[in-house]
Image (tube, rainbow, N blue to C red; front, side, top):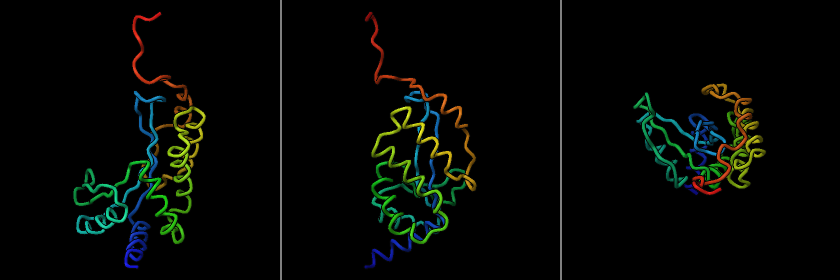
Length: 173
């Protein structure tokens, strides 16, 4: 029973200091020239490191590191898509979503993007990536950083830059 109380405590903590993020990063060597990365973070002053360690224990995943630019703040991060799908999403559904106001709008979008990528591998096709990009653009970044990439620019680039894996064969005609 004690474990359940820890999870509810952590859920309340996530409501205040947690963050879901879906970033789009230029990556010229990938199929479409960019990647979509769902990410989960909890921020805490270094004096609250034990709370981040508790999150690491509950999720059996993630890493803790100093926030770039402010070494007094620590970051607990889970950035592996599979771990987000298998651990973060179910935790949110069971412990955060029944009580949250903060994540009501973004969590369903976040969940759908992760599901499209993890279960359906939609990010591997132009049609699937188009659907993912439209969802990402619905994701509210009002309090976060503004998007660096315009959706029309990204959609234009959905013709694969690397239609095959590996190097082209030389000398074959």
